[in-house]
Image 1 (tube, rainbow, N blue to C red):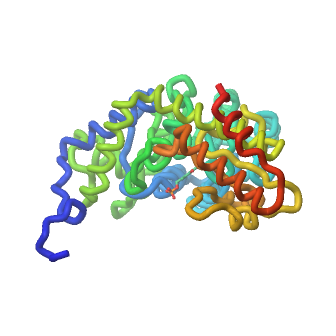
Image 2: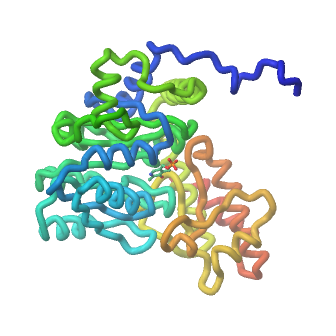
Length: 360
Ligand SMILES: *Cc1c(COP(=O)(O)O)cnc(C)c1O
């Protein structure tokens, strides 16, 4: 291609300064919150790191629930910022139970309780409502990583009373990974570390001083116009489809995937109430590794191994964002069945597809 041909990617027009507030307001509607919503330039792990390091203060204690790599990182960021963070680690690939969280809270005084809502690494769902109630009873700030769950699960911040909630457009909302958001409650603001000597993308206090308190015009720094044009389009698409319809599309795809996997393997990784709507994890039959099953799957299949501790034992069916559709799930189940048959195992693809189609 001639270097003089206009290209929409590098030559994207500036993103209007007046447009950022609308994006934050759109996230606020999706989360049903009146709390401040900050836009963070960078993928959602940057927003998670910003939330963690902004909570740093001497003598502060956190109970950090770990059900994946993201939770592990969050605890490490808290500790780097001077928080005494205790990790409560789940069995690999499994959710934590509210009773485990309650028992851990009884063992100390905690100012912060941090949890990942749904995991795309292992397809599990943590008991967020119960965890939120425990945080309230304990007087702890509730921090939620809702990056994977937003759009795929009900997530009502007003009802939950969550204090710091991190979301991104790149999972169920079907967008790009270059911009993310943090919702900050009034209680959380009282615990946020003040601005430092120089501005930092990881300082929520800076985002407040340089954006919220300046009337929500231009974002501080030099935002990538491309990322914010993409975010605007993703959020507009979500609002056009409707949040309830998007959540229902994920619920339906997940129900179909679970029914199909149960028909094929005779077992479920977690009970339905503990399963995320984003990804369904399946355990290959005894004696078959996930790697062997993936190698036996037909060319072009979209199955993947799990991620993180325990993930190597799991096969994931991804039904997140644009993939949250029955036809995607049916294709994945057919590939799964085909891999089982290639390994000489019995697999009734017809029964699996029928079970998926009949799942309510
Ligand atoms: C995807 C995801 C993130 C963000 O990861 P990125 O690498 O920034 O896309 C954070 N938390 C959870 C639970 C996720 O699934």
